[in-house]
Length: 415
View (cartoon, helix red, strand yellow):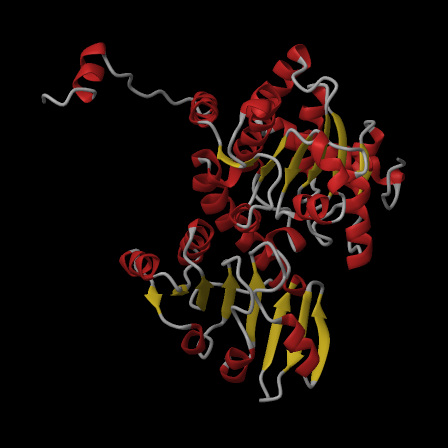
């Protein structure tokens, strides 16, 4: 099928972006060299749906270097960069994506990327897996397995698996230590504030920042807000995580209390209606809201659009809404992922680790997929350790190694 992109003439700009990423992704560069020789994906079709910017594009090129026939689409209408999509097409890959796609166009792009009959799926949020199961089940026999990048996608997969609906193995890439401990915490923490700061051009120091959700992404977002000088409040549903937030030096309260004093609210929960009608009724005038969860449902945008007395664009990627109660609130990037819809996403060095896990997990599926009995599997420990070992070497750091006597001691019950 022919690629569907905005403008192939944008390719040169996209190529420069990808080359910059390549310079700063030691792991992927090493894997590209290895895959070019060993061709682990020879004869295999891979359909990938991940935020289509330069780091994702380089992952696609690494997989293609390994012999894969790549069929690429985005995982969010506002995170696709048209010049990067054009760059991939200029390198011979098939791409179905463009910036600001309508819901109908986005769905069509997902469908067209799957029509090749993929052997491996690389997903971010679960849209590929959802469509192939619900609308294209005739393609399921071709699928060896797939990899899921993010927390939201894993939540969907676990629900499918519990209902007995998941028909092929999926690797929970997000659960790998070299993914969530770094990507979710340090990547999200930095990229969320990159997106907020470049979009608003406002100071964070001295402001009250409310972070909804204290998982790894929330921890990183709160940590960076604190580093910028904000006073941080965390909202949570899990008492253990709430205690952890308190011990980390943050205040904890329900959203309906936090919204009254918030200068910024950042949602990172993976749930819907985290900020809802009741919160809008009491929210501080001038509050800036943004979302760093996968889908644009964490802030109740449907209610806001239906009930606001007035709305106007205040600045690129900032929409103001006048509430029935008289307050103005400002939504960044339409309530979509602020770090990608209003920024460039996670730093290259962080995605180097995450995408190395993706590439090696895909290789593992090709080699072992037919042997797998479970439908949801974790990244093999040896893959996680391999990525960590390589990354540590690139950082110029060394660690101790157990002596035989120490190993014997640790494996003995007679201490």
